[in-house]
Amino acid sequence: MKITKDMLVGEVLDQHPDLAEYFFAIGMHCLGCPHSRGESIEQACEAHGTDVNELLGKLNAAIKE
Image (cartoon, one colour):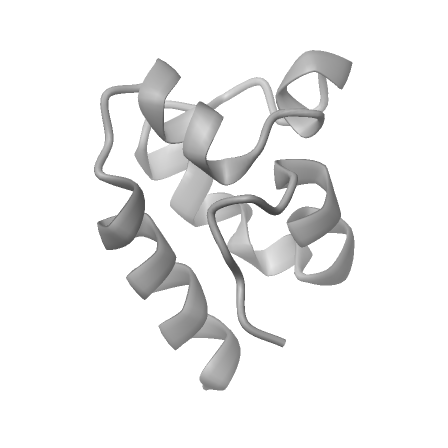
């Protein structure tokens, strides 16, 4: 499965909980709150001033390992 910018943060973390560290790294420390889990990866990046393509690269590289 390839992670895309349209996927929900919660959906990704349900399947790959170990990826939480990458969301923490962009300043998304409230991963348990309903609002953050319902955001798309693109929305989360916009809210935290992070390049979505850079984060996607890291997430997809991590799930290939």
